[in-house]
Image (cartoon, rainbow, N blue to C red):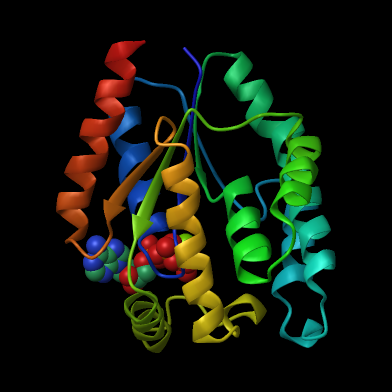
Length: 212
Ligand SMILES: Nc1ncnc2c1ncn2[C@@H]1O[C@H](COP(=O)(O)OP(=O)(O)OP(=O)(O)O)[C@@H](O)[C@H]1O
Ligand SMILES: [Mg+2]
């Protein structure tokens, strides 16, 4: 039975951590699971990712970002996500089209209606069944990322350079998106310990699987 789950949240909110937990949990239960991340997940998408993250590209315009993210997403949906769902699998994606609405829309102030239409076009109208939003205050997320960077777990890229105010708009944008579609979104308190979030997410997904 196909199921499409996405994780969203500000920088350092714990998305990748929880995606790993959930994928492992689903696999243990015998589900056929595909884990993807944005931007990327395909050869073309990874090439686009390099362009997006390159610190040399400081002059990139928000509209350019929209098309690059959307291009990577279009490829990911057609090449990977849709075929996997058609075979009855469960897809778990670390970010998806809502990131465009939150970052380019609420963050950069671009027209949300337009961004929805572009996302609709890029995805062929594929939206998640469930979106888990991990909410953390902007400072907390950035603090975690700085700590991770000091430990050498990844490096700061172009997209991390935006100022705190920008990230605040993104966070508030996410909260507005979640509020406007409570049937799809689950808002979780990302400041809780990772293990207790893991339990909450397993409960949400179990209920969803049980209902189907
Ligand atoms: N619930 C949590 N409480 C405290 N620290 C956490 C929690 N979840 C994850 N972390 C730590 O915070 C850092 C960021 O976590 P993670 O990479 O999962 O976040 P992310 O949302 O994927 O970040 P990014 O925006 O960089 O992709 C990591 O060092 C991780 O170990
Ligand atoms: Mg991550």
